[in-house]
Image (tube, rainbow, N blue to C red; front, top):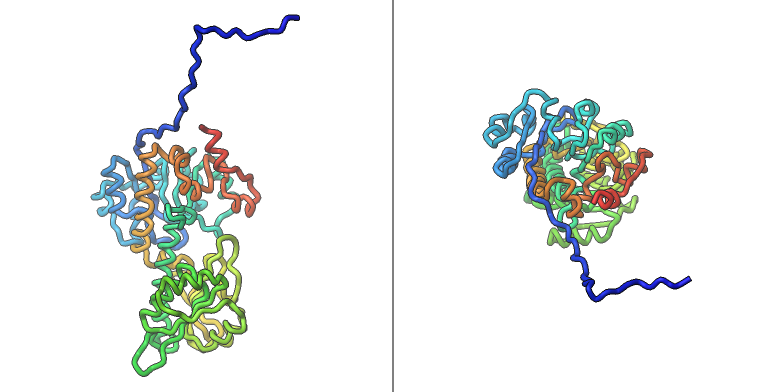
Length: 404
């Protein structure tokens, strides 16, 4: 058997193929729907009239349910003048390919969701359920959560803004409930000449804790901050530019400080799961009558053992003679400021999505956007959610790569 030799002819020319580069697609016109929220005491709106105006002027279509922005004290007229189309039927709003919501998806929304729709909204883990996720998966929804959306500096801009609002609001709330008219101690939250300053304990040195500390110091209060992360305590000192009394969370030291304080703030953040309880019922019982507890971490279960969820309508209850303020979503009580903060992040994001040719194309180019996506075309791409609700997890990077 003769061995086969390949034929090489001088008449052939061998050239390398050009490398095929990824070409960004042309811009895409977006059709955005903003429904009126009916749950979670939600007063915020995800896009302000100013934000809508920029989107409309860039050639996009925005439809909005009537009175959707009443909670933020914006009128339908504000939005129609900005170029949005006001609709009186919620189902018509839900026909938009992109939905922008300021509250999570609820049961009432499910029948109106469209196949292959994109939803931009918060995701409240405490209210999330398996059947909600399964219904969204069946409709091949792509879902983006506010909380996990990252910016170029690696931080979460919407979470940070909401935390700043909550941190600034805490001391205003505390000052209100310390007053005699609200059965408080009748103490002014601030420094008056010749009178010892009001004592504030803040547990948690994250964004909420830092802004609350800054506000309390500006009012003239004496502030003591607890956190188990020494790096966070150092960062707090550096950011404030003044030396504040700080400590790791050591139960005996914490109990001693709580005994003599007027205001105690729980601002511990926990990325996943429930916030740990660091203040026991015994510690609360030892606090002064008329003092105020504000548990900001109630969103994730609360860090005071005596905390129970309250509402904006009935924000406080008294237990062991201590006033407890445990309203989740404090930022919604300052809805207009919160709406402006959310709109400042979402409006530029939607313009970027358009320039990149839609969400599918932008996901391919933008790693920060991938952080925010917890469901992609019906596939659950958030590992924590899949573990918690025992649903199938799919890696987003593999999904995107398989579609190229």
